[in-house]
Image (cartoon, rainbow, N blue to C red; front, side, top):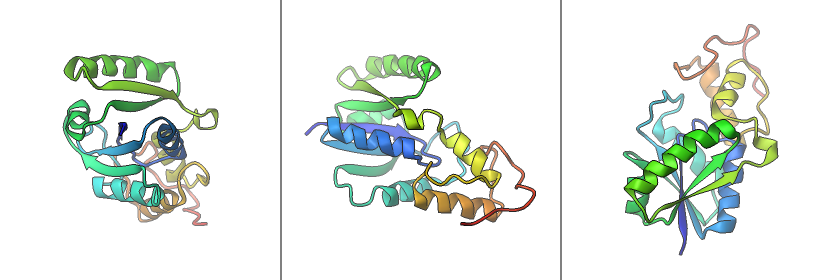
Length: 179
């Protein structure tokens, strides 16, 4: 069985991530969505919340496993016995970083390949950071993230839970619209 590891912070999981996971299932027998614990980012959601949101969004997809991990991604991939790391590319700026990272990973674990997939055109502009920025200001993010994620974001921001990772720290002037 050919398995790939799709690592990320997933803070939060977006429809762009889901698209890549589903397309990855067309290439690999199994995709392991590895939610990173040790990240230089300051996530809005805890590791447990990010894992649970991904599990709920992908419930029923038997070819996808969601699990938390810490440490070097490529070492975790080797431990899980995958043949590849799955990475999404939106723009040239993504490629430069991902190319450098893939070369280092190849140096550390020669038998693990990195497979790049271009993001579907409809998700090119989406990032977790932009989604958080929009949601923190009360914007309608319906259709950009799975519904369970949208509701969790609204819940966080309605309660005033923001962290340094949220681009817009102040709530919108008129408050939040929950719909």
